[in-house]
Image 1 (tube, rainbow, N blue to C red):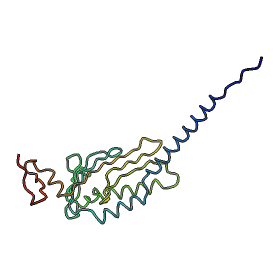
Image 2: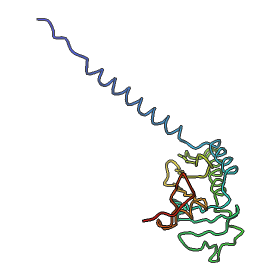
Image 3: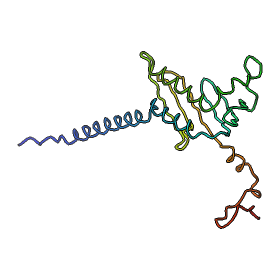
Image 4: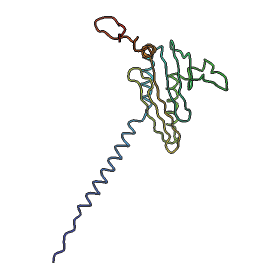
Length: 192
């Protein structure tokens, strides 16, 4: 009696499964590496900010990680005039922060801090980091920044809201006083 032929179709299942696994891992690594913040991306955002930044704006950002809190920074005529942390005055050594230190909390300072981290992370012998950032398309302001040091619990995340002074005032108006847009004439108050 002839011996029954043994089927090796099951081998193909594992070959295909292995190829798909390697492909998925390769795509994930490639995608994450493409997302990484590069110094050129930061320089582009900085140039946009320098060129298009508003003279008057309110900056609210939250930091989570080694230094946590919600900062509110008021900028008028291009200068920081007020800084609060979690709704309270920022202090240094139990004294109110000297106004000459206010610029350390504006958008340019945030970008300076990110650049410092990028330079430190590029040094030989430093642990790998996962760093991503999102910038505003028109003015280059920071929207979100995440830096995570691999193999440690060190992580910092910054989420930013920037409101130009004119936008802020309009959004704080009661709805009955908010202007209604009329394409044929001047701005008129809404009626209920």
